[in-house]
Image (cartoon, rainbow, N blue to C red; front, side, top):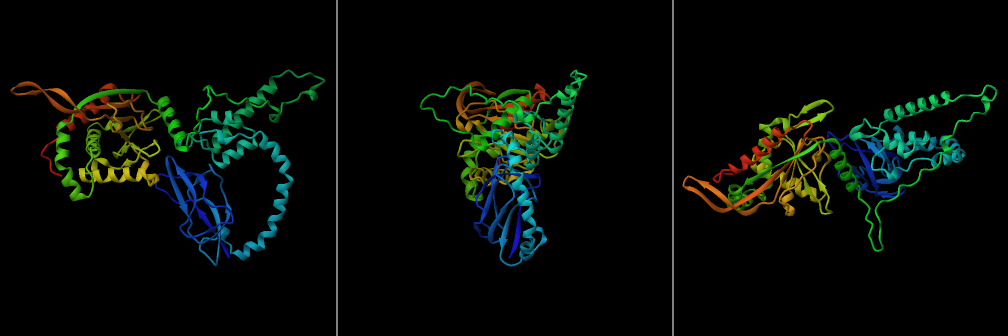
Length: 453
């Protein structure tokens, strides 16, 4: 027999790590090839990782909520015969020979159990935090008695603000310097210096639990936030605290768009096998406006503006559980309307079935959300960081409107909607924000009723 190391696979060019959310198998369970062993999460996408071999689960290297880097060994599987990927480069026989050497280490761990209990008694409770911490950072926090409040206050320099090893080590160094300065500043008696006692971290008074400000009455139902709900809540608060949100609103006459779609949608479905919705039409208009105003297709990094080369449109899609996910249409300006319709339908369908890949929700440069699908006339959406703008599409309504012609003005029924543009006023002024959304409106109002597709 031999051992096979199951590593976290590459999930996309821009994905370097993932969070383990659930073990589907326990140690000792029999596993078949391609059978899912554990679940992972990257941002809002949940995925299952299958086994590459038949065997028995021998070892779990990570716990639930641990952050795992691509290529790290997550599980060890015992298999029959020889395999290419053998744990530690050894065969099963060689592993058996090495087994006695591990006994002293286990005995040492048992002897140290009493010491570890004292440390873990004051260890932070990571389950109460919405942030993700790597196993290395968790171990350092436990060993150095860093409280949860201290850990939460550390500014992370890693991806998505995560705390790295360097961040926590820098904090420990600064904390040590402060403590040393406080001890040195105390006047010490000449003959009784040996009586000066330094407070031990383990004797600090326990922190009082935070009391809920919400009054819970009899019969009230408490529904815990899901993992995705926590991520969305954190992302929204972070965006509000980061960007100076400003909104511009434009009313658009989309009568030509509505009439044209009604005329061609049946033929389009027969020819392409796809439904033609309004979404690809709006996405095309937004892509054209971004080409005209490229300074809306940017991100702000400190005091530097990053002008994006590609136009990657995020498309907010509703999930069955009520949450939202934002798949990204890459290089949207290079797609014709047929390609845009196929891409929109594909991403929306797989989003509803939780089949998106991590790369398909990353690298967006601008986002569009359709609040009109829920009946809203307009909305004030929150910017999807690190972008600087988001456009909300309101419901299309038939309303009486003044129509200007060469023969005069008269009142008629027109199909109209509102475009609501939220943008980051730190880098996008009112003129640019207003001109951009007006460009989208102009493109839609000038729609050719005789356009062929």
